[in-house]
Image 1 (cartoon, one colour):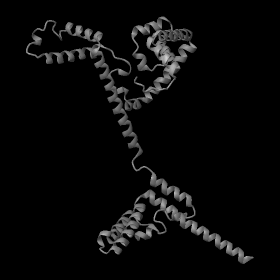
Image 2 (image 1 turned 135 degrees about the vertical axis):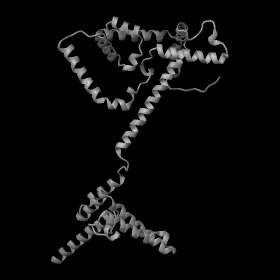
Image 3 (image 1 turned 180 degrees about the vertical axis):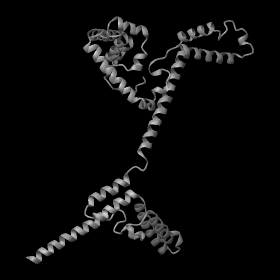
Image 4 (image 1 turned 90 degrees about the vertical axis):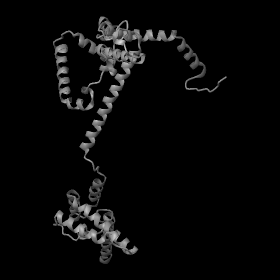
Length: 337
């Protein structure tokens, strides 16, 4: 009976040993001790480890061996030496390796430490964040300028704005009304280019383009918004609590700006989008008192009914409804007859 128990214990220990060897096989220097590979002690300094590595690297460098077998053996040994040096030259990696030597039974913890360090990003996360925000800011600023250029070019082609710009240019003396001495010595192409430049200048100076197509500023880019975010958050909380104090507690009437803010929220429009609304249209909102929820709901319902009526009377919409009724949604036909 005692003999049988001894055999069970021996078998159990052999299983544990084989499991340990299997688990440690893929970690660090495998079954070999990294310090022994470089021929240094655990107390060796970084300079001693580096010096030992350089000596062994010279000895086992594959290019120093001519025979194929010797070259292959040297190459394998060189890899082992390089692996040991990579582990011991780094303070954190060496600390993890020393911990494994002192606590050989914590197999899974060693695997976690080893592979966490191997798959961890090599680049500083702060640099990645800095570069990412910078790229987004540049793209954001460039896109805003593209939208602004699109708006300017559009207004230059609309007769209403173009004619007004020409009138202002003539009033200010930028363009002569009868082609006087300002036009002497210039070709028609040069005069046309000069006129286009003047029209653009007047539109940029006199027209207040709002919304998403407004002239971009550095304040709108992500970097600046992040820098001033503490001020923005503080300003928001101050505004929020002052709103509650003035209108919920003291029951003070809304100002015109506050009325427009409530209307914008009811319409679910962004600030840039609401800024693009014409001033006379905003005046109409105020005249209808749309900051009162009941008035807004009634106005919104009337707008929907009017839109449905206009669609029903629209010829193209009637054709579309007739097509949907006859052919169904999503059907495609390639009949050219």
